[in-house]
Image (tube, rainbow, N blue to C red; front, side, top):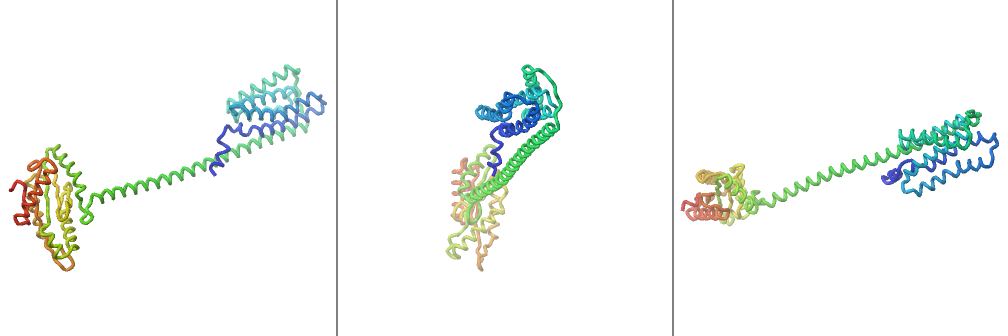
Amino acid sequence: MTNTVLEPLQSHHWIAANSYRVRITAFALVGIPIALHIVPRNPGVLFWALFLLQFFAYPHVMQWLSQRARDREKAEHNNLIVDSLASGAWAAALGFPLWISVALFLAALLNHTITLGRKGILICFLSLCSGALASTTVIAFHVSTDTNGLVTLTSIVGLAVYLSLMGIEFFSYIRRLHQVQDAVDEQKRTLEVANHALHEQIGKIHDLQEKLREQANRDSLTGLFNRRYLEGTLERELARCKRENAPLTMLLLDIDHFKLVNDTYGHPAGDEVLRVFARALQESARTEDIVCRYGGEEFLLVLPKMPLHIARGRANQLLELFRQTTVMFEDKRIPVTTSIGIAAVPDHALTVENLIRSADQALYRAKSTGRNRAVAFNEF
């Protein structure tokens, strides 16, 4: 539909697209009253030859020349000037009969103004006057404005028909413009809807990517961050603390006798213990703390900007919290305790690897000395 609407408007100026039928119509309508006006005077063969060339052959010749021009719009502007020259010449040759001259003048003025606007008015006057002047140099100047009733009627009717046809042409042209605008508006609305849907889809893809990224960094059982997340984050936290000359403490926690829980109550019960332990650990953490499931029954709590002596107190609070925690699984009550190894920067290490190693050694010390206790790296 869109291509059909756009096709008549896309190639060149309106007058270039419609000049052929407009010129044929105009010269036919003005030729009739001129012929009726001249017949009573018994003109010679030369006149009728010129008349036939002007009003019947001329429009076809101009169309042939226009089609072969490189710039059809410019060619049609030049053709309109020739039309006006011819109209002025005929008006002067006939003695400026009133209604014929009016019809020639108004038709030429309309053609020029619709193609060139205000500039066309001046060109029209100059062309008509030039044609009339050229005619009077060949034929003696005379004025005979009278026309009989039939000539007057055909001149007025011809002018009215021509103006009506031009109005219809412009009405059709404007209607096609509106159709084009409607098609463009419809395409714009379609594109806006598609663009909105695309943005929604991009948003969904972004959300999905975030969810996938979050899932990749989360432990599926406990919902805590996993070891993969810890590897990148811990490096950044350590670098930030070094820049700000702030401490960083790590607690490495291990659920006591977890294998016994699995052997005694079954692995589903062990999974429930892990979930309860992780939830309690997460709920007790600060906003800036990083809580991870390090592997198996081991959990790691990173405490940015927390010095070692405060972290000791925090570890003791966690020990008490888990002593008071009982996991209910089916009709069984499963007690939970934990052993905690503590290591800090810069007290015990300066790198991530050494910090984790120090915390792991402290945890081993806590487990080997009876479990259910917290031991710092420098305490042995």
